[in-house]
Structure formats: C-alpha cells, structure tokens
Image (cartoon, rainbow, N blue to C red; front, top):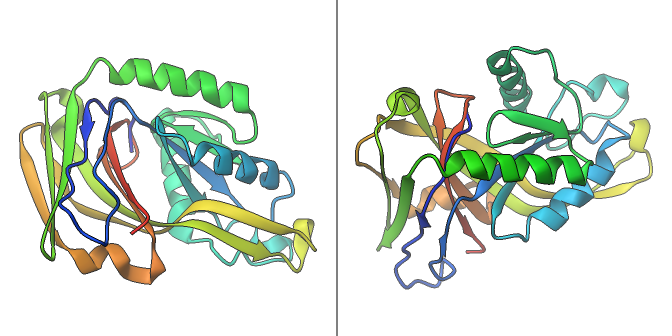
Length: 244
C-alpha cells in the first residue's frame, strides 16, 4: 500500500436519512494507527487518534494487531490481516520497523503513534506530496446503490492501484482485564472492522457500484474509500463517509 496523493476530494451524496450531507475537502492525508490492547505504550496514541479523528484534513484509521496477545490479554478487536498490513508496509519501505503504537502516514512515512509533533510534520510532508498529483473521488448514492467514481492523471503509481472499502466504528470502549493494561478502560477511534479490495484503478476514469447494505455490515458507522498503489504503497486518494 502506498502514499502519494489525494487531491480535490469531492463527496456528492444524494439526500438520504442514511448519510450525512455531502462535503468537499482537498488533500486529506490518511493516518493509520497500529495499536494493541496488550501494549502499555499504546493508550496515549489511542487518545491522540481520538483528537485527530475529528479533524477535516485527515482520515484516521485504527488497526488493532494481534502479535501481543501472548502477553496475557487477547486483543478483542485485533485481526491478523492488520498485523500483515503493517508488515507489508515495512517490506515496502525496506525496513524492519514493526512496532506499537505505530502511525503510518500517507501509506509510507511512519512515526511513534503518540508523538504528535512527528506525526504533524509527516502529515504536512504527505500533503505536499499529494499536491503533485490530482486524483478525485466522487461517492454518490442513488436509491440502494452507492457509486464510487475515481478520476485522475495517469501515472506509473496508478498502474496497479487497489481500491479499498474500509468499514469502521467511530469509537469502541474496551475494559482490559489482563496484561500490561490490566484494569484500564481504553477508547479506540475509527476502529477498522473490515477492509476489502473492491477493484483496481489504472489511472483513467473508473466507477464501482456497491449495494448500500455493504456499508452497514458489522454495525459500522463510518466508511472510507482508499486508492492505494499496489496493496501497501502510497495512498493516492481517500474519501470518507461517516455517521449514517
């Protein structure tokens, strides 16, 4: 999964009680937090993501990993697929930096998830990189159908771009009964519950249709669409729907 751009993001939503009003935003940067209920260093990062989650200029996603489960507490939200996504990022970067809490910004840069200044600097750098590209996402509801349209400038990075549908819960509170965080109650924000590839984008106009019911699986109350070079490279575009 990769990191260049999201430029001129347009959300066009038809009137419906399901979705919030459409909005327009430019150059949103995706911040993915790899976190664990079994990691004593993670709660400050989880809290920081709560602050970031209300911002309009970024899209926060929390991806709980499972590799600390042996410490005495099995993470109730973890998915091995998120652990693999984190490892895949490290392989793409060519380093061995897999840890918690780790924030991956724009699909490439990473920072300790509790270090606000470092993350802010990398958000700014990622936004600058996005300005070099122009990729638009329009999401439109027509009855029971959701249409996602992606348009932009052809580039080498778009040759194998994956279009991800990400379903998340805006906030989940967990009481931790064992392990390093025993006795703590931690709130996790924009917790990814499903992350599914729905197609590929090759640098020309493309549309994808989904039944509206796909966005409501598993009690999700938020959705993001990511266009990402290959599987774990630069994020070329991102759009968000929330609070339906």
